[in-house]
Each structure stands twice: as structure tokens, then as C-alpha cells.
Length: 231
View 1 (tube, one colour):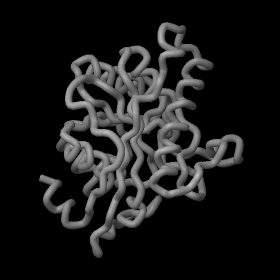
View 2: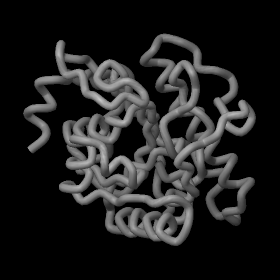
View 3: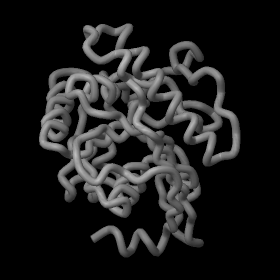
View 4: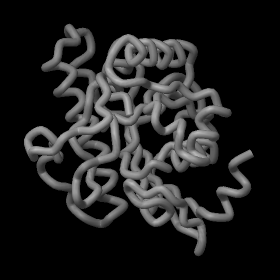
């Protein structure tokens, strides 16, 4: 079991509201370290919900993180294409069965130089709006001390403190019942990303940027890009 050894390396401090004890919802975290799924997985377990992830396939090759994802039955997402859409459908089925599904709306590690959440993709809100279930934003800070962005090694000692804050469900009522065209999905995704960025700002004691980092606008090449918000 990963929890006891992980607890030797990490101390969690929880803020905000508890996770719902029952029922389906999409949990939407920020993403800036390869070890994020392990951090969010352990945090969710400590908050009394069993996590199920829609996770980028390459994460399954990361030491420790990959083992955790494979052994806990998570859903690998390939590059854009039929397998990507099959993964989304698998996540939808989990939601239909009352499970919590973790989806990283950014799709990959943020490219923002200061680790703020970047532009989101639409997978999380698509699952939520199609299934008529909530999106609950969550943010963590301190994970970069355990494994830096793009880092290949975990630094367990000295023991790290990671703050986790759970926000209120994002109000998506304005979008429910509308055709899920790109404009609707983009607007709803922006609302989710603003909520996540606000939570990150609370943990950091800073005001988040007024605009999300956009790799296209900033002339950055998105490597490992996936469709529909899959990480």
C-alpha cells in the first residue's frame, strides 16, 4: 500500500470544504508536477473518497506514479484519437455509477512560468454536463518541492508539507441543457479554470493572473497534447 510510505515523505494540510461522501462528480485539480496524480490520489483517500483518474498514458511509465495508477485501476488516455474518446467514455461510465472521476482540465503540466494554471481543455466539463454532475475544483501547493515540474526524481527528505484546498462546486447552471458546442464547452471550462486558479491563489497568498497562460498565444509548442481535456 502506498499510503504509509508516502506519509513519511509528505504531510498534508487540508483547507476548504470536505469532498461529498457519496455520489458522482468530476474532481478538477491543477497540474504542475508528474507526481500530481499520486498526491491527489492520496489526498482523496484521506478525504474519504476512492479516486479514479483519467490520466495521460505517459504517466503510467513514471516510476512510483505509474505503479500507483496501474494497480489502482486508473484510465490511461492516449494521444488524440479513438483511444482518447474511449477513455472519456470510460470516465463517463464511472460517473454514471456514482464514482468520483479525477480529470486534469489543463491536459498536461502547466506551461505557465510561475506554475499558475494555464488554459484548460474541455474534457472535464463535457463529462460533467453530459452526465449532469458537479465539477469540484481542487488545488494543491508544495508538490513542486517533492518533485519539480519536469523533474525525474522524487525528493522525499526532509518531509514536505503539501497544502490541499477543495472549493465549492463550479456553477455550471448557465450551460446545462445547451448544445455542447465549442463555445459552450470553452466558456464552461474557463469558469472551472478560474475557480482552480482562485484556489491556487488562496494557497499561495497571491492574486492569480487575470488571463490564463495559453501555449498557442504565447508561441509555445504543446508537447503530448490530447483532446478533450485529458491529461
